[in-house]
Image 1 (cartoon, protein in one colour):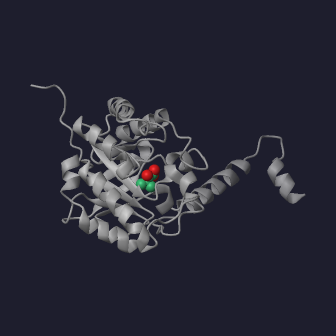
Image 2: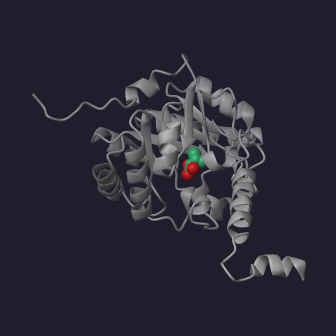
Image 3: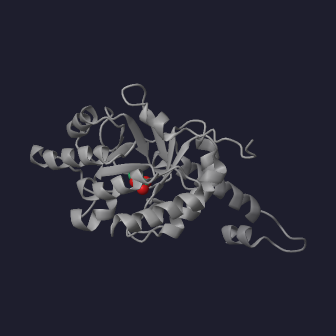
Length: 274
Ligand code: KIV
């Protein structure tokens, strides 16, 4: 008998079984405490490379390293026990060759215990996705607005606005599905195109700034909680944590500042009076 407790986490086949059955609820997550809070309520947590911007204040995701992704994924794994956890492969860790991608993805899985990785790119990354899935690494695809190509797009621009752009994006979706990916993120994509792709491929599509007709949805948790002062336009706010934190810190600071020391005047009170 094995001494190891069997994992109770949602599995890759269970996520795939959502297709045409029930929506897949996904959020990004980067820390242990929030992982604990999300765990009961979401099917999939993505440790996205958006953490470069959201947690580390970077301008874009290009400076994120594999070490950063591993560290944050370890925290999310420690904080959760139910949701499927996916690590987002950062820029430069998988594009060079399928072999480099396998080396880095297998390290990420070994060092974190997460169940899958995500790669940006459609047809151009299909060979790599196939190489990984054939060797036991579950892969989530990501097409449409892929932030690691921001320099090529010239900004965060919605993809597929004109029908002339559609065939290439549809080909990306098919290539990702045929390469063995278990799901694909459709980001920043014109709604009718995202809906069309959802009907065309056999794996769940997970929309972000795409279409409610996708098989599931993902948002950056900090955006939907109101922690980002400049969230993308498409994000609905489900909380006001930025304002809540500010109010709490203000109350705390006022309380500490009001303290007096025996025989001394309170400098803050003096300042106010002056
Ligand atoms: O890095 C990230 O948070 C992502 C999601 C936006 C899908 O890739």
